[in-house]
Image (tube, rainbow, N blue to C red):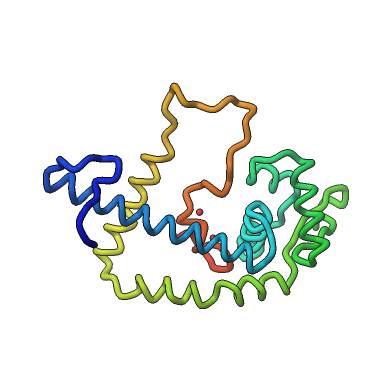
Amino acid sequence: MGESTGYWYGDDADDAKRRAIELLQAFRLYRASEVAMRRRTRDAMAMGENDLLTLRYLLKAERESRVVSPAELARYLGVSTASVTAIIDRLEKSDHVMRGPHPTDQRRIVVTPTTDTDEEVRRTLGAMHARMLDAVSGMTPDETRIVIDTLSRLRAAVDQIEPEHQPDHGSEHEPGHESDADGAAELGQGGPGRA
């Protein structure tokens, strides 16, 4: 991995702290690569972050045989119903989603991805997902458990909101900053890896 730069932790660490710092730096570098990959994906598909998050959510719901309402999308994205309507309008115009009646309540509508959307996502991300699977498929069960446990502890650490930094109840969260082991792994593929 090379010599530790200390990042914001400083350079006076003992061995255990130095290993922890190197591990966190490796995760930071992975996260930067993932963010860049997501940007390239958005560019390749000519859409914004919330559009891509909407497609990811709809494709996952479809795999789970769930129907999704515009209100559910608004809650997931942390945006207003007017904003989610604009997102759906854009994705409908580009033939990525369809609106239709709810299967049991004709007064409600649901949003579903088109068949072409699933194929486009698989085409765009299929090779990358295969490389990611190859990178981890040789791990032993013990190694896998260690990584999963470590990621879970890190997610719990970053999900905590410091009392003096809690957002106003009316502010919107940014879904692109969710615990995004989801990000790359769910988009076009099953299961969390948050895409």
